[in-house]
Image (cartoon, rainbow, N blue to C red; front, side, top):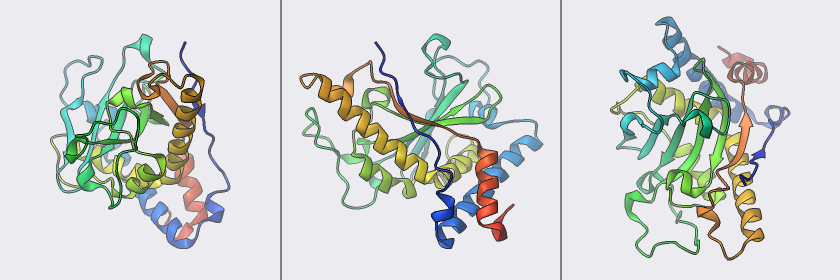
Amino acid sequence: MAIVPTHIHADDGALRRMDRQRLAALAAAANDVRLCQRVLNATGDNLVGEALGRAQSVRPWDHHPPGDAFDAVTHSQFYYHCHPPEEREFPEHGHFHLFLRPKGMPSGIAPAPVADLSANAGGDDAVSHLVAISMDETGRAARLFTTNRWVTGETWYAAGDVCRMLGFFAVNASPPGPVVVARWLTAMVRLYGDEIARLLHARDAAVAACAAKDPAANVHENRALDVASFMDIDIAARCAAVDRAFPSQGG
């Protein structure tokens, strides 16, 4: 039986507690998110269409772009894919998975000491999954979510360490894929950084709770625990709230 993911709700008062420097950063991210969306809207496209590129058909599990988009400077990575309709956790078209590789991580971070950690774990293949962004059938972002390790085959890092990684995710170079989408994803991590951090801590709590029920099992490979935590989002409402909190930077 599938384990129900933890539903995290937005903290409507968080913006009022932020200092102006943090609000300025959010305002810049909000403007970047809207700019990317306006660019695509002007051509009659949307984020999903741009992510799929020239794909003639969308097959479940295929990565878009093929081989993933990767920034060799920041070691940030992402791809978009779809699940078969009967295997979708949410009503969606598909979702983006965002990652950071060790060479792009801040210093002092190491994989979590889980029971099955390989003695050879290391190098730039010890990738961390940061967050996923679920897209609806109209090409709009509908929610953020985190996953158990087996879902993406990532190397497991503690939530606190993954939170430190968020500010290092940036796809700036021209990857073999959608540049506007890359810029949008980079801005989304900035715009929702605090929310992603909450989701990551909820992820670890869900994994710990699952492990406590069956200590002999490998919780990170438990197929019943797929999505660990999620949050519904409304980008227009978020950007409007940032504008109200920091009106001199609204756009």
